[in-house]
Length: 137
Image (spheres, rainbow, N blue to C red):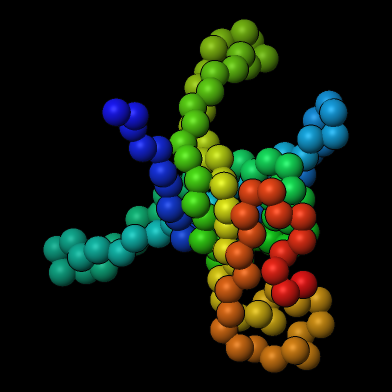
């Protein structure tokens, strides 16, 4: 039996997506995502924030770079990947990233429209790996 590697996050972008183009014209974008939980400790509310490194590839990367911005609320599905690299001093380091398979922009549609006169109805716009244009755009 094989295992399951599935991550679901809802959080706010910590920075604008950084889009890069690799050899062969492959797009990749990355950004930090903050998720927060609130719990009670000794009768007071405590908020704990976790930061996640998000990576998107190809068409999904292009859509994220075009539509997502720092502070926006987004739903992301993907899988965890841990990779190693050498830093400038030749020391081997490890990083764990969420490789996104799809994302949904959350909040008011006007938050994502270039022309905010279209109204402010709550709406979600979903992007799936392999999309070239988002639905309804």
